[in-house]
Image (cartoon, rainbow, N blue to C red; front, side, top):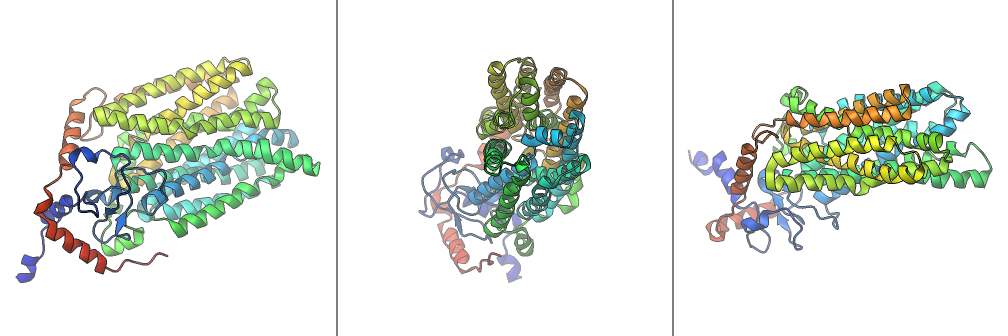
Length: 526
C-alpha cells in the first residue's frame, strides 16, 4: 500500500518532466519567447531520465526524448551535433561512391564499344539497386537506429566501387553499378537519424542541411576524380586506362567513415537503441511498422520526390555525357561542368528546408505544403528552359538555376515527411526516398528512348504537373492546402505546451532529480 502511494502516476510523471524540460544548470528558466529554436549562448541543458549523457550543449525538449531545439553548426559534441556531422559525412561518402563512375561513362563507352542506350541501362541498374535497398534499410532503422545500417551500407557498397576499374564488359558494368547503387540508400539513414536528434520545429532545416551537404558528394566526386585525379594519373603514367585506379579512393574513404560513425556517435540522444530497449526509455513501434507502407501521404510525397530527386539522379548521371555529346567537352571539362549540379547542394537544399521551417512558423503545415508546391513548379519550368540552351554560355547559368530549384524542392518535401507518422519515421523516409529512385529510373528510360531535348521537356512537364500532389496531402492534426484552420490550431497548441511554470514551484524536486542523475550508472560506450 505504501509502495503504491509512493509511486507517481503516469500523469504526474509527465507533468513533472514537462515542468523541468527547459531548465539550465544556472537554475534559470527559459521564457516562452525563448522557446524559438535559434542558437543561444553557451548554456548546458540537462537531460531527461536514464540518458547516456547527463547534459547537452543544445537546448532539448525532454517531453520528446531529449530531441534538440536548436542546431549549433560550430559544435560537434555528442550526441546531437556529432550525429549531425556523422550523418552528413557518411551520406557524402555514399553519394560519392554512387556517382563515382559518372564522369567516366564516356570513356567506358568508347573502350567497351557500348552504345548510349547501354550506358543508360547501366544507370537504371544502379537506380533499381537503390530502390530495393531502401525497402530494407527503412525498417532496419526503426529496429536498430540509423548508425549501424549506415555503416553496413557504406562497407557493402565500397566493395563494388573499388572493383569498378576491373570492368571489361557491359555485364560487368551493370554488375558494379548495381552494387554501388546500394550506397544510395544511405539517404534514408541520414534523414531518419536527424528525426531522432532534432525536434519537428527545426527538422526541415536539419534534414535539408545534412542531405544537401551530403548530396554535394556527387559534385565533389566529379571534380575530384574526373577533373583532378584522373588527368594527374594519366599524365604521370602515360596510361589511357588510368581511370581504372581512381575508384579505390572513394571506397577507402567510405570504409574509414563507417568505422568512425560506429565508434563515435549515438543512435539517439538517450543512447544506443539496444540500451534504450533494455532500460525502457525507447518507445517500441515494431508492431505498427507496416502502417508506414499503408500511409497515403507517404506515397503522395514519394511521387513528388520522384519528380525532384529523380531529376537530380538523372542529371548526375547524364550531365557529363550531355556536355560531351552536345558541346564536345573533354572528360575533365565535362566532369567540371557536371559537378555544378551536385555542388549547388551546399546551399540550395538547406535553403529549401529553412524556408519550409519559416513557413511553418507562420502558417503551419499549410505553409510547408505551399512552399513545396511553388518550388516544384519553378523547378519544372527551369528544366524545360535548360533543354533549349544551345550554347555553354546559356547552359551553365540555367544549370545553376535548375539545380538550385531541384535541391530546394527536395528540402521542402523533407520538411513535411517527419510529420507523416513519427512512430515509423524510418519506414516513411524509406518510402519517400525510394520514390526519388523510381523517378530516376523513369527519367533514365526517357533519355534512353528520346532525344535530349524531348527528354528534358518530358521531365519538366511531369515535374510541373506533380505540384497538384500537394493539394491531396492531408496529415491528421494539420492543415491542407485547401484549409488553414487546422494549422492555426496546431500552432496555438504547440505554443501552449512551451509555456513555463514559475521557478519556485518545484526547486526541491529538480535538485532531487539532479542528485539521482549523479548517482545513476551510465552505460559504457561500445
